[in-house]
Amino acid sequence: MICWFCSLREAQVKHTYGIDMYGEVDAKTTPAQTDVAYRVRHVDVPRCADCHRRHRLARFVANLSVLFFIAAIAALLAILLKWTTPLISGIWLGLAVGLTLAALIAAKLILKGIHSLRKSHKKYPEIQDLLKQGYRFGQRPKAGIPKADPPRKASDEGTSSNT
Ligand SMILES: [Zn+2]
Image 1: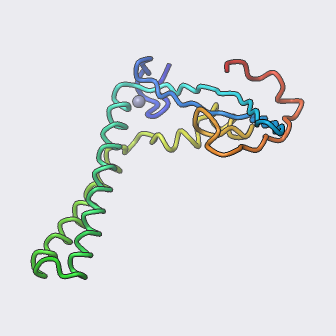
Image 2 (image 1 turned 180 degrees about the vertical axis):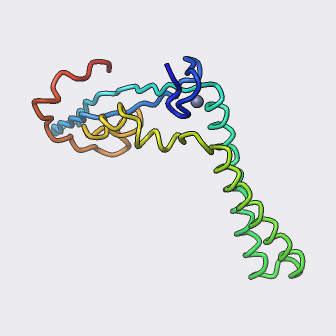
């Protein structure tokens, strides 16, 4: 099978991008408790070793950009609150802003020519189908009492099996 992310190389099972989605939530509230039933579907997006490596690298670089951004905010505070001399906080701010931008650009370049994971969340056909059926990402409904999904249309019956 061809890798979905680059459409070039052969996908490898160990590099598959797997994601869980849940849906068909059915919440029944009785005075004593709320019973929530839902179905979990696992979607596998075929991926090659190279795309897997690039996704990992891009995520790492994106995380770095968040750190640099926090450093830039700290530099702004340093200037406003006069923690250091203006020269030092000025250099600090310039460096942090520069590194933030560099990391953002690097993450873009790393993913150049291949689909990002976020794109697969929107464009991979099986995921699109599940989203249309009201499925959401994750393995279980989030904290709080989830609302039951609207009843499914007759045409959707019998399309899901694995729980
Ligand atoms: Zn690939």
